[in-house]
Each structure stands twice: as C-alpha cells, then as structure tokens.
Length: 236
Image (cartoon, rainbow, N blue to C red; front, side, top):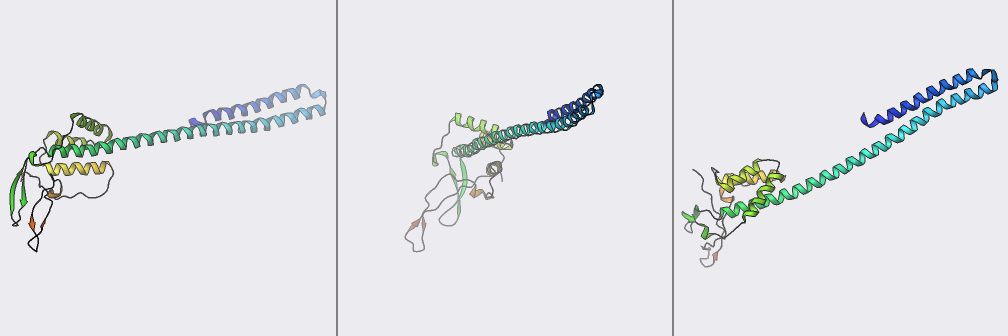
C-alpha cells in the first residue's frame, strides 16, 4: 500500500545493511584470523550484535515512520470530514431558506390571480363566487428576491424537479394548479427530509384569506366567525 511505501524501503535498507555488514565482518575475520582466537571471537561477537542491532533498529525506525504517517493521514481525514460537514450545514441552511422563500413567492403570485370558487352559503347551499386580486390581501415580491430564490434552489437542491415545479408555478404551464402546488410542497418536504403527509383535499391546499361569514347560533342571536377556504379550479 502507498502508505507503507517509505517504511518498506526503510526496512529493506536496514536488512540489506545488516547482511552486507555481516559479509564485511566475515572478510575482516578472514584477514585477521592469524591475529588470534581472542580477537576473532571479539569480531564475531561484533558481527552477531550488528545483525540483531540493525534489524531491530530498522524495525523501530520503520514503526515510528508508519505511526507518523498514519497520524498525518488521520488528521487530514478528520479535517476533510469537518470541511464536508461545514459545507453540508451551510448548504442545508441556504436550501431551507430558498424553499421557504419559494413557497412565499408562489403564495404571492396566487394572490394576484382570479379564482371562481364554490362557497357554502348560510342556507346550506353552495354558491359560486369570483374572488379577484382586489378581494385579497396584497402581497408583493421583488424581482431580485425571485431571482435569488431561483438561484439558491438551483445550486442547493439535489432533486432538479423542485426547480421544475417552481418554474411551472412561477411562469405558468401547470395543467392543474392545486395538484402542482401540492407536488411542489411534497418535493420540498423530501428535499428538507421532513416527515409527514400532506392533505390531498383541494380545499385544504390554499386559501386566500379570512372572511367573516355570519351564521346564526342555535339561540338565534350571536353570530360566529368562520374560515372560508378557497377551492382551486381544476380542469374538470
């Protein structure tokens, strides 16, 4: 493995050195053998010691080098993991804000559309009411905010369909607005890794505002206030 490349070379060096050193000592012994057995014994002892010493020394040095290299790699990996975590955390923050902004932008656009919706009357019968932008609270959004949201969705969302559905709601082309909005919200939930189901009833997908509708209580005196949820028109 690459990590032990230098260590293997180092161990090989000391091993070769010990063998060659032993050969050199043998030559010295052959040359000075006439000098006496005592001196030869001393030289042979030196040979034996040099073999074990250099082999052990090579192992120790190689081990220290391995540990140093492993430590360096471990620290590099740890630093890289911290960097990746910081990038992912920052990416999620940008993505979360972009998704929330996208929902608000879509809501602002819907408030400028005209809707024809069935509304339950006080007599229990439905009547068709046309809701125009003048009837709803004014919501405005700057073009620069839309562009920033669009860019952030593009660079942070892993699923490109999030941006595709946003474009459908933003620029038109959706066959069924309520279902497109519902799909867009579902994609955002998945992108943000949020759990839970979304309501599939069109009457619960979006409402334009809170309107007072007077209804008689059982005692026939006090009126009550109710929410009027607007139902999107479908192609049906």
